[in-house]
Length: 438
Ligand SMILES: [Zn+2]
Image (cartoon, rainbow, N blue to C red; front, side, top):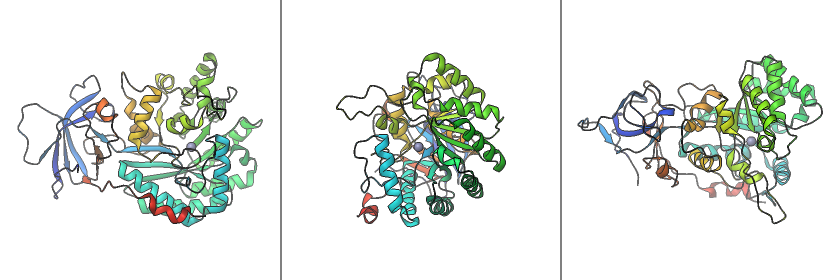
């Protein structure tokens, strides 16, 4: 059992913690080659009251809890998920692991099974899982083709209220871009999204009228003062350039809200000259990009002819980061036809991202991709960083360096919320059995 002797008055010092310089504001100690600084974190109630470099040889204060160099990170931020689809795999799996198979199976499941009760229970299960793993903020997409919009948005509003103070929950509507051709219906959906303080979203495809449809989306976002969130180019097709089209639309409209674009897989398949042109536009338009490494490794380059996949499915995060484009990684789907696995564990996402995307040697600022950067995209203050005066929302690991942290599941991590350790036991899959029957 991995516990810390945190006193009930809630005044204590986490002594000799290893904090990452990229996720700690105002730390003045010098970082080691991995980017870590040894520090003492003083907590009072729900707040961090100081973060000071750890000085060897100083006697511990009476309220000190010795961490012996264990890593402490801020709670995670997961900016691209699909909580409404989560955990339907047992009743509607993907027969061949393909993108088309995922679309078909999800459509069938949604049409038959997504009552308010069904969506609500699966979402709550997912949120309890993410909370136990140490996540404090989540953006989910909500399938919003009629009639699902009328079911899922009220469920989301109730659940967001229920989870307030534990997980900051946001939602973006998810519709195929071609569905927005129905202008009256889509204007109504935008109003509904605005009423729920949500985000306007769509999946872009290279349809002939893509630019006109994007113009309409940007105009609606400006009218209702909404941020935008796209699924773009989740394909190996070289001619899929909707990321560039979104950047051009943002520049055309002088859009001042935030735009997050997910996937952008095809970018990794395109000629260098085209890639550079697109990335320059993305940087100028100040778009942010999220890569979904686990889901895209699963779905992209899947071959059902008994041959082996040859590419990784992720987008060009290094090239984006070099241009100052804010980049994040996130969970995407969990145990649904788009991804058979996953548990909303952002340490797993970061571990997998490190391996697929080479976010190491040096690690640099890459830890920001699962904390501070997505928090900024989601407009969340005091989330995804450790700072004096900030919330005492942090995760204490066993690992003392990257090779220890990323080699084991760290299932016994300690999650501290508002200064107090939480119960990190995970909900039992059996809880959902009654929803999975025929
Ligand atoms: Zn997605």
